[in-house]
Amino acid sequence: MGSRTPASSRKSSEANTERSPWRCSTSSAQLLEKSPIGITEDAVQSDPAVAAVIGGTDIQQGIVAGAGARPVDSNGNPWMGSYITASGNLLADFTANANAEMQGRVQVARLYHMTDDHGVRDLLSFLLARDTMHQNQWLAAAEELKAEGAETLPVPSNFPLKKEAREVSYQYLNFSDGAAAAEGSWASGPTPDGHGEFTYHDGPTTTSPMPPPTHPDSRFYGTTELPNVVEKVAGAAGRPSQGVTGGPRQGASGDRRPFCMTERGGR
Image (cartoon, rainbow, N blue to C red; front, side, top):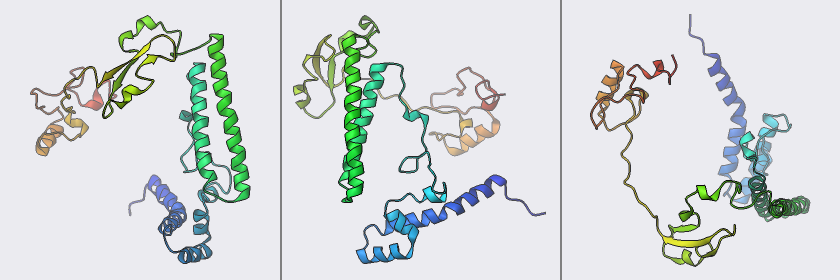
């Protein structure tokens, strides 16, 4: 009997086949980006998929979702819960929200100058105005928290300042070329939290030697400075190979069993 293709491989192949029209259209559109106008116009007239991509349409919206909504961004990256900032500290979260609105308004402002379509500009004008509102909304809420004494700088303000290394709390360390940074308000004068004065220090306060490279256990199949043949022999024998520092390399527990048989690797 002939061998059968695994189901996972068949599905992968089918998925690639299904996506191939999108890939071809996108590749064609990218190749046409800097071509003469006449060539681009001909391609747009002869292939509606290419026309859609050049026009800015994400044709996966039709191919994958049947024109339905997809939980992805404009680049097709799936939406994730990591987009949400919810630290539990209101001043930290309100400030993060204001930052997100600022980034959003920057991008909408760029989009505004990428089109001369009156309808699109009307839409973007509305979005710009709403982002203006949202920036001010979150900043006002942050100021209200400070005024009420619920939270202030540094966040979290209820952590005892005496428990931090106060000698470096307001020390600006200059890693820039030249000393121009010393002229900034962040290098001298009172701090925004009202608890200290900025100081300036040229360069890092401490240095340390570069740590030596790590030497992974040969059973992880990592690349080390050992000759490949030594790694192969050590792996075949099921034991750690010798490191440049001498002595067998073992797990943190000193267990010489194969990694997959240790508590860390499972039983």
